[in-house]
Image 1 (cartoon, rainbow, N blue to C red):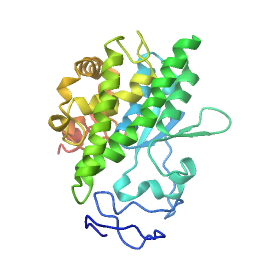
Image 2 (cartoon, one colour):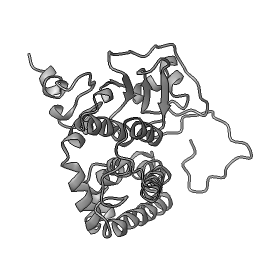
Image 3 (cartoon, helix red, strand yellow):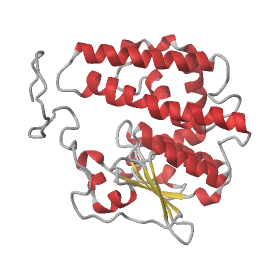
Length: 290
């Protein structure tokens, strides 16, 4: 990889060397599976294959919120997909998500299994399936979906842009960091201005818009992403901080953050979730006991 500041792109790009950075071992310019591996299947109608990243947390929070409302059909098995090991390139996972990204959901509740991939699509699917967290009134629904898709369009600038160049890239490039830091701060200001007007993003009610945005931007202002809180001066966004704290204290959100988590305190890591009691008995601190 040429890291010189005067790099000139060739006329035709070719993949002939590692790209560098934290995820160089799993990055490639082609799709499809690399090895045969079937996915495990549990006893519940919903099978989730994921990891506790912001995109993964969206879905586990949604499922825990649905269960908290009494939707017994939202019971799920959450299987850990270790993307650093390339689990997402197994044949079974690619059959559920041809894009080889977490999270991926398989709904086995009907006569024919339904696959759903992309976290935003999963949130809409579950909201419509269970009739919760997505308003029915036309204007309120439009507002909710607008903020949901705002997150889908904005997060790549935060994760793949700012997060990559600030935290993961093999070299620090000022132009790239400055470019994406500016955009992330603009996005935080968009949220802060909106949340000065309303309690939640779509209005007075908690919806899938909040569930989608919170793991990324709530996590950012609480200092959980990229160790960048001071760099971005996230304390300035007081309305986002208020909103992030409100959502972060919801019991279902606390549980959702634990599922498929592989970092942090051992008591906060529930690598796989198959029943509600797992939060009390199957966290990594409990499993490490003699």
